[in-house]
Length: 471
Image (cartoon, rainbow, N blue to C red; front, side, top):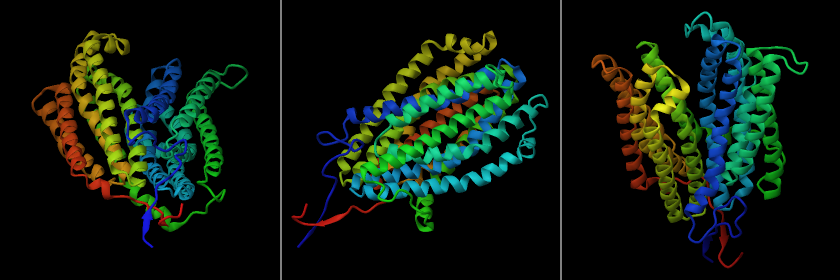
């Protein structure tokens, strides 16, 4: 008898559905909750900065700086753990969902191992941060916030792993609800612990850090419970707990580490650019920071659409339906370009009011307005980059996006930014023109990789085989 490859016969709540598959409706269904989740993640950091601002400028600046360093360190782990989503999506699509729970447990093991060195960095917070030579008024507050936040980083890593499972099965609504609840807890605890209300001690900056750690710990615990319950109900977790397996962990790291490297080095290039701009004076540095903050409003939704692309491409390739995977990619790309293009138009039209809402200084408004004109163009290229990176990740192609991102960021963007900013004397505006070169070049390279369709044959899992005629 001949053997035939079987795909899932009864789609679960998280599996792609619809005639032919890959519809815009599917993309929107998964992307919208992911968009809200990403905006909520940003809100948690903003809440700390907002409340601490009432303590003083030094405290606010310290929390903003320390929070950025914390996320830079954690972004490597966060990127690496996207491998959980990739494997789970492909397993679900391939009809081998029983292995999805095991993969997630290996991700949880990676999260636990990653927490150890990060915990050690937190303990050595003073020595670590001294290398940045920040202003003496900010240093003690930055050390306090940095140390406490990293002591609780393991909870964030646990959340990343469990979130990868839920995203992989196509459930972005549950992570959204949990993240929103965590944000409410964080805001309440910020109010209580920073200022000492309702009988709580007044802890200042330390209170902001502990509020975030507590809400993150609660988020991670809830995510773990939901993963176990959902995994057993869906048949993805035959065993309640799966022991760490070196071979499976290495396999997970082989796929996820390039994503982690891509994220941390990409952020590193922007940090280097910000450092360059900081030497241009207060006005240009402030305008640059305000423009970047505004860009986050559209970047996070764009990344939410990228998450949907990763899930659907992974599931459809696992199911042996490359045409639906391509349709999903095209629809995600269209959605992101339209959404971020509209946001870019809003930046262009309302640039003065937007900058003024962050900083009333006329000089900052003038420079920031020029940056938002450039940002309006950048938006379209960034939409392409976010979605195509998500598409390639869904297929398991993580090394190529890493390589081209590093090359474009460190060998094109930064040299061009220095040349235009310093050598040509264009200031921060010249640096943002260099951002366009970086984004456009990256979009061309990722588009070339996408059009070659090599990613369609990079399936990471095996589809189960069954004897013909046997259901």
